Image (cartoon, rainbow, N blue to C red; front, side, top):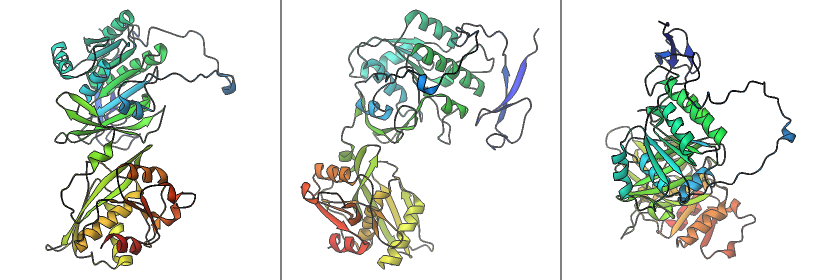
Length: 457
């Protein structure tokens, strides 16, 4: 009987050691090593990795001698997914999609699989039965396509089916349920996830077939498995949102074939996911009366300008230390802006509770939203409402100056398209800008005082 070989893997980064260690020397985390059974002999077990073996050493090529042709991307009927992936699906790419349980990852992938006309799609599920997938497919209003379902967890059996079926798109749901016979540890372990991903990556690169993998996330919000998993794939996409909210956000954290700042928005309905082509309309709440503490700001997500609603509530602190709480906005930047308003604007906010919320569940990092945040806070403090036809797009400095932001023309055009009458920008953004070329009124300002004098009437 052959001796069982074991090693210790770090669950955080995938580092392996011959014995247990308290602290990982690679990532520095404590108590992350687990013992797993491995078996490196007998490499030929029907896996895709062992199907092709190079017997001669590869020769390097000069970079100018490498032939390169732009590959045609496969465009799907889902424009939001095309935007997030950088223009469509790249042949031979390996895409990892992560998200919380019940957020809609499987629904999104099944909807894409059913909506690819003329493409042979193989949907491999290790979590659901064929009947469960059929029940979900009946609810989706998508045309009938060449989508085939396989319920299997063994990668060797999957690759045998692939060699016979020859799909043009492969979807794996999920990578944590896959198991390779080359590794003897259980499904979902560090070594199994890494081995199965390596086999799928080799298949994608050698066959030119795009592969989508659904991945689970941990309670900390990161993708389960070793960190090396995210380094192996070409694109990492996260599907975010609150299960109690109908809107979902698809964003990239890594993309070798496009920008990592693009964003797609969906609405979860009983009939599947609906694309939201104009997200600004859903991010601005409809109100019958004007309220204080609300301002509309302009932000950019990739190439897409969005008009979002900033809500603020300022009240007297009755319990000692004032609270500064923000949802969807950096709390440290909020405290900085409060200090600027008190020092440069003369507003006594030191004994006030300040609560800030970005409507729609978005997380904003664009500094162009600073002016809208300041306007919303002062509006709530003075209890004077700001006209809903006014928008803001500027950064605020420590001296109370209104600073310029990038792509101001796109922000102005988006505000004009949504029917705003005025937009406040930095006067340093007006260089090279045709102020008469817009129907919206453009208000260039240099100081915060000029903004408050114009909107708080």
